Length: 422
Ligand SMILES: [Zn+2]
Image (tube, rainbow, N blue to C red; front, side):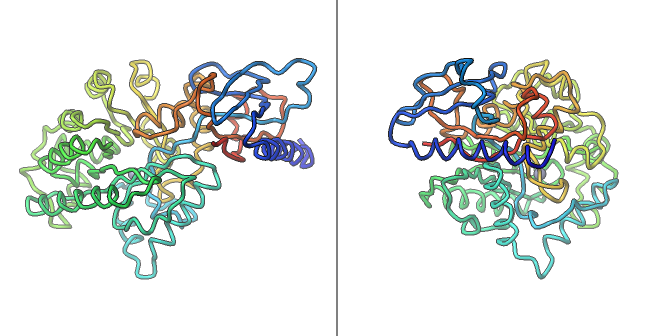
């Protein structure tokens, strides 16, 4: 395809979007080449009519008018379920890739670098999210203040306050910090922030602290996100009480044979998390049959798969098919630029679709739209483009219109060009 064809496709999309915006206030019509709702098979050549922010009619574009439809794709609002924006200034992922404890060491060095300004890193990440027209981002907040996230109604931020506390003496202090952060977000009155909690991981959070945080999430109606079953090293620490994470904790003076005697399982942590209104099991790369069975029975729990991060660490094959076949909700996240080349959710989707030819387009899209919004407990992002739904969504531009929506999405050829908004 020539450069000229590429730019004319995008220009036609931008012109259609301009026309839509300039007609605000009256009944207006949007013609799209592909309508990908996330709940039904993608539809082609569809015409949506909007009135007062609500879709009033959806029908096929008449045959005689189809050639003038721009190569636009409409999908529900985009949701990145998991990232850490504090590393958004990195130009490439960190190493080493073959030692998780080594990688954590590099991440900590990065975080503690004297010349690093977390507000600058976060603003780069927010900019990248907005350039990709994300509607919502699930952000793990570690040491940052909420003032480092400038107010912007265009991007909803679920602020998962990270909590790290392995020793008995840290439990009260970390719990109080979490309560204060939740109350601060509530008191800020900001409509673009939603409070959440993130007990970091099995190897950094005391089970008693996890229990208290889960109770806190119930009290305030919060979503909880926890890194779980992420690496073989983590499984070894729980199951046998040794390995590189045990050694790392020993070097930090944090290892406790009482906490890690061996014989522990991910299931016991899932049982605690199950009490939360909504829980995200972040990564879940090494979830086994017992954990999958547990998740299958707990629909308020969701697995967050970060495909390119999973590939970066060269983990074992991801159990995506087994999860979806058993009805477990799986959504996608980018994780941070410390383990991913960028924060582009459409590239994450393309990667998953390439790797999993059996995956239906609508189910793949739902992992970055409706299912993700439900998993995070987001407001105002539910639509499947039927008459009566709010007229919200993400508009993407294709470079050409002679491929199927699946081919375009799986090759990463679609790029977001705007939002359909009220
Ligand atoms: Zn993470």
